Length: 562
Image 1 (cartoon, helix red, strand yellow):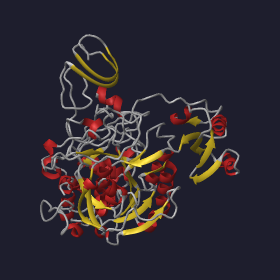
Image 2: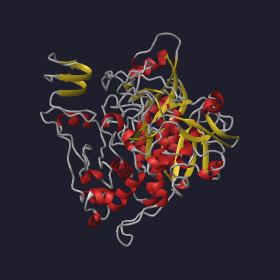
Image 3: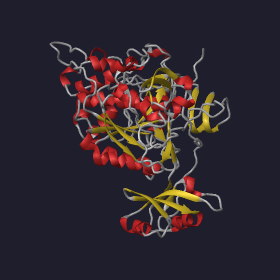
Image 4: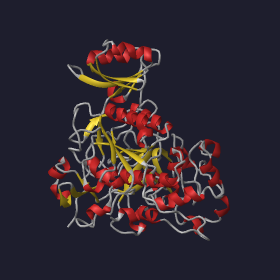
């Protein structure tokens, strides 16, 4: 019987438009969702950015109703007339919509290499280069979602709880059920399910500490400003609870560049504070009619500083050759800056994890219930949300073994340990499907120059590719000028340097090792493993290949093009 997938819906415009800003001295720049709006008696929730002096006028109630204060911004509820006045006021720097944010919805631990990390690996000689086993104990993971319900598989490891949902003060637990499912993927223990279902083998980091930061409401949606408040709460409390990771299995449509997007700015603040932010790519890989699309990455997954995760369908096997990116998983690139995303992919289909007692998902979709009852129930969900949680747990394993790693180094290690998926490519699967055991080997052995003799004998079969794109990689994919092969021994410098730019990662488009695409006659493959002289694959722009061109959008010069 064919199983259906449960993917939480979000409205998303996938077309790429231009972002038009008014001149700086005439008024603030404005996100595209607010650039035009209907006339009439409307109320708008907006996030207004500016300096302290400009925002003080908002606090005096001169521009609408103040809903929340954020770092360098205020959240306002305004009428049409007040919105127009804000858009013309040169005192303010930028105005964004306070958009609705929603969640993106036992073989996985084997595929991702988590079980290998739990067990550890022996060294080459006398234990040299060996990796001790660990399960992520003491590493704090903040789950910004719909809450975390009490569950047997989580015992006492939810060390803090805070509710920041503006419209639901005083609500506790997880009335929706999304956050509880993610918490189990990150850090649930498998012993609770041992007599209930073999489908749950535990979270990626079953000893991690979980911090419940509730930012989504009882039906799985919330406000951007609530998520921002949650990120800032984590930054302020990171030392108290040992928080090293933020899991953001949520998103909203990209309506402006990441440099002005308040949610992406909050991600940047968290990364600057030493917190690795793991964000979902989104579930918008196809149109409603099932047609594949590009550009479905959601905010804050479009942030160059986030580790953005798409989904992999393992087809319930341990053989990576049959792995595919499922149709729902968002492909890149990200809108406006045209950033190559996702960064990696991880198992995200038919994932069994914890079910929140009396949660909306379990009650509304009883066919997703797998086993158990009450506080020890389990259900199966699919989505990039699940993939993101899996990676958050894997990073907890990495940081337990190598606590000094910065967010940039974590991102590099996760990418370099991944197995590239040539049929999906950078835009579909980023650096590839995660393997936490490989990432841990690379992070640890990268500090030992004398052991880095060959890729195959020490580091295994990972692709060894890493990138951090700020908007330049997409051009270099086509003309091949941005591919650079580094010597293996350069890996030590990359991991020893707190400033990756000083180690040659400044432009963020390098292949650390592995095979670069070599087109024999100058044609460029965007994704896939076809590399023939008579074919051009173009994401957008103009194609002028003489024989055959595949253009997603843009213009193809006649002469055999399609």
